[in-house]
Image (cartoon, rainbow, N blue to C red; front, top):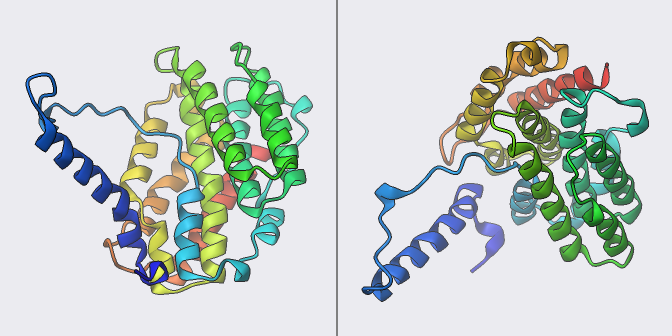
Length: 279
């Protein structure tokens, strides 16, 4: 099979096909001690922390990797902050954490140990400011493994670190900080994805951005935030932008998103991130 010939929609469907095969195998092997899976009893575990990596991988199916300027895209999009200057652990620090986690994923894609080291250091300092007793040893391992060129291990450790932070925040019911981290992480990831796709635009590449259900779920998270959090300028900016962002990515499973709309998505996402950094 020529993997580069896959459309983004088909590429996105592959994990589903794997799941279906697994379910079918389990049904065939089921017995008294292993009852068949009942889809009706499936439990919604909520939205996982979005990552732009799936879009990066889909883009490499359509474009030769050597033709994609990962490092230049990182330098154009990544934020440069001094974590020591921030003290608002209810809104700003969670927002910055989401942004810097997305930056870390991009640094891994670019295989740049220096860029990843700075992102991991920022994540460590920001997470420590949450006062949630998060084990930040993974941040140090991320930097060490990057310097050793162990990029698969780096991605795994960053993913575990991200999960550790989210689990701590979610220990408190309805903690708005987990929603803020998740939404800003997706928005920063969208800045990277839309910039890359605009640079390598085609009908197929634009469809990589299609994810209306995810954006709807993020909208719902913002809508459920406490009134005092929603009143923060950066949160209000995000709340105002998400409906249009959802419209842009709400296309058919194999339909294109117009290039002007890809560029608009990037502008909307950039404006949201600027509103966070304006504090």
